[in-house]
Length: 265
Ligand SMILES: NC(=O)c1ccc[n+]([C@@H]2O[C@H](COP(=O)([O-])OP(=O)(O)OC[C@H]3O[C@@H](n4cnc5c(N)ncnc54)[C@H](OP(=O)(O)O)[C@@H]3O)[C@@H](O)[C@H]2O)c1
Image 1 (cartoon, protein in one colour):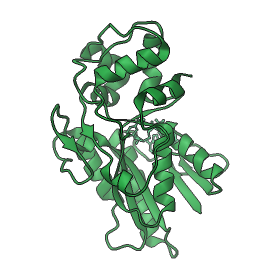
Image 2 (cartoon, protein in one colour):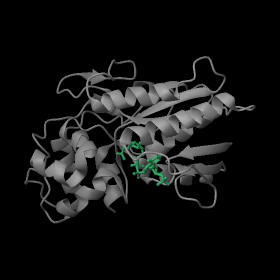
Image 3 (cartoon, helix red, strand yellow):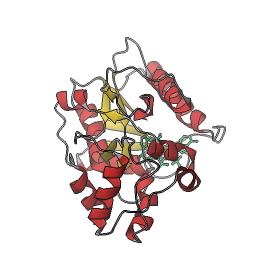
């Protein structure tokens, strides 16, 4: 298959590109930087988080609608920020969300920008949890304090922590591209039983052979991670990948302990 990957130079996109190339697909990246196997666009793009997602998605959606030979499949990765953070609710792909704060609104508009009603191109949206992998993402910032024995639960620690190993996020996108029966929303989270932030802190400390006693106050988290990722860590949703499993995707890292051991190895 010939695959065009938006965000293909990033943390998630690099893992996806490697997987797709290893599976024999021909991959071209959409990037602001020129380079081999890349499509670039001009610098009129605004830097704001909304514009970076909406405009590039709209541009690709428009290209699909105008293409004489539209692609077989169009897969968008958004986030579980679509679902309202809660200490009690459980969300699958059919659960409501998307209209209560900046990030849920962003995901709603982002997914709407990608939608091509009635189009022959098969459309899939993967709502990703916090991506665990080497060399990037939220865990890249957490490793040093945990390695120094200064890690611990974030905020109250009771908030849910919807996570996915980067191998599985790339795997779900590749599955969505390759399997003709997959369409609609898939939750990109691990199928492990409920994980809270405190569970995550314990598991990460254990993978590193370090203690995890020192809680990280909210204010410090915001300073270290910036607003977007801080919200993903301070608030959380219990998200289950019901449709992802039903479509036949088999996880490489369904359990947190094994996922973290691979990341810190
Ligand atoms: N990492 C996570 O835990 C996580 C969880 C849920 C959802 N997500 C979503 O997944 C996506 C990728 O995350 P990531 O961790 O791989 O991010 P990343 O490492 O920061 O990569 C960002 C990618 O987006 C492109 N980009 C940056 N600014 C842009 C702009 N103004 N306009 C268009 N493209 C721009 C970059 O391409 P160039 O620099 O080559 O132009 C790069 O390929 C993001 O939309 C994020 O919200 C991530």
